[in-house]
Image 1 (cartoon, rainbow, N blue to C red):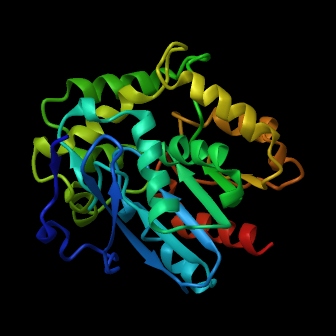
Image 2 (image 1 turned 90 degrees about the horizontal axis):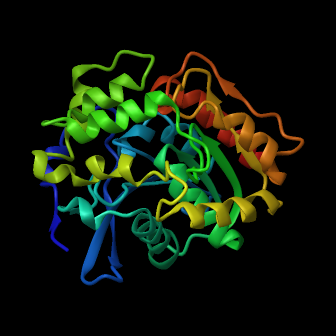
Length: 301
């Protein structure tokens, strides 16, 4: 597997994101080693909150939440998925699969960092990956926050807006990552913020991950990941782990999953599930501080 690594100078002077980068080296079961970048805030002995981003963002997405979580005494850890942010980037789209991304994040969280009693916060692909981790190793987790995400199996069709997004990514001769993030926000992003989302990708060679991810979503029932997700659904629905559904009010892609998760997850019963107002798909950008406060109350309550 051919890996690319974004030069460090691409990450200088990022707005409101001066966290010292950290790295974990993973032994890739398919050969070689992969470096995963991450940032961390809060006390080292605080309750762990694992913040998983999605497509096509990176840990920069959580910059509004990290200070709130840290101030509350939580140990907030935001890794970059392989292919994104400061993490190594497999250069070929064929090197990306749903199963590999689950394994890479499992190895990061449990082999490299040995995290325990984890509160998962997963948005977009962060939920698709994170919920699989919870289903496979529930003893590592204390609670779950699902935010504008789901666990598709292909047994129900994805919304038309998602299919339009997938096709646009597949056909775009130049993938404008900053523009894609802006399209999922209610607020207007500054040129500096959009540039920060572009920073991990110096040119098109580095964008195999963002280009591959939409096609990895199980949107047909015979997708290679469909059966694993069905099994994960069954496990998750029977777990007693507290399960908070914290969606925005303006996400046409995943909004329909909120009532399904509230109804299906045993751990969601009896909880007051917030709806984050005036926020789009990337609610961490639109209302990150508000979402972080809900996470704090969930962990401390």
